[in-house]
Amino acid sequence: MSKIIEVKDIIKEYGGTKVINKVSFSVNEGEIYGIVGPDGAGKTTTVRLVSGIIDVTSGDVSIAGIDIKKNIEAARNLIGYMPQRFSLYEDLSVEENINFFADIFGIEKKQRAGRIAELYKFSHLEKFKDRQAQYLSGGMQKKLALTCALINFPKILILDEPTIGVDPLSRQELWEMLAELNKNSKITILVTTNYMDEVSRFDRVALIYKGRFISEENPKAKNGAFEEYFIEKIQGLEK
Image 1: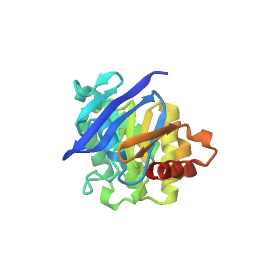
Image 2 (image 1 turned 90 degrees about the horizontal axis):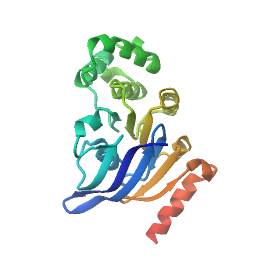
Image 3 (image 1 turned 45 degrees about the vertical axis):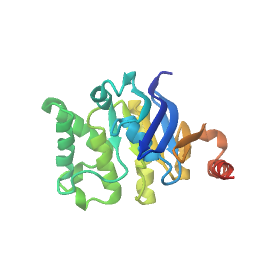
C-alpha cells in the first residue's frame, strides 16, 4: 500500500519553545488515520504543518511524493482542509460559499455545476442553498465546511476536530458521510479528535502528548478499551 502522506522529524518552534517535537508518521493511500490527544497536545499544529498552512521549523513533509517545501501549491491542490472552527462567510448563502471556494481552486464553470450537484447529493444541503451560513445549525455548518473542502476533488481530506461543538446526532451523521466518502471515493482522511468514542472509526491512530507522538496503534485491536489504554500511557509519562 503506497504512502500518500509522509512526515519525518518535524519540529515547530514558537519563541524558542518546541510545540511539535520530532514528530514522524506516514498515512497510507485510502486510510483513515487519526491523531488523538488532550487539548493543547499539538493536534491542530500538526495538521496545519502537514497541510502547509504553517511552515515547519525543521523536518520534512511530503504529499503524494511532493515535498511541500519545494512545491507547496501542487501539494495544496491535493488537499481538502476543514479547520476546527467554522471559517466560512456567514453573510453568504450556502451556494455562494461553495462557489467562492470553487473560484479559489479555479474550478471551471462547465465542471462546476456537476460537481456542486454531486456534493449537494452527498451533503443533503441543496434545499438550504439560499440560506445564509450564519442561520445554519452547527451540524449543517460542518456539512457546509466539508462540502467546501471537497470542491477541488482532493485526494486527501484533513479534518481538525470536525465534530467538536455539535450534537450527538450531527456527529453520527458526519461520521457516516466521512465513511461513505472514504469507501466510495477512496479519499485518504487525516483527522484529529479528543473524543475517545470516535477512535474505533480509524484504521490507525497516533497518540500525541506535549508535542510528541507517544504511540501508534490499531484501535480495533484494543477491543473497546482504548480510552483506558490512553490514560495509562499518559499516567506513565507523568510519573
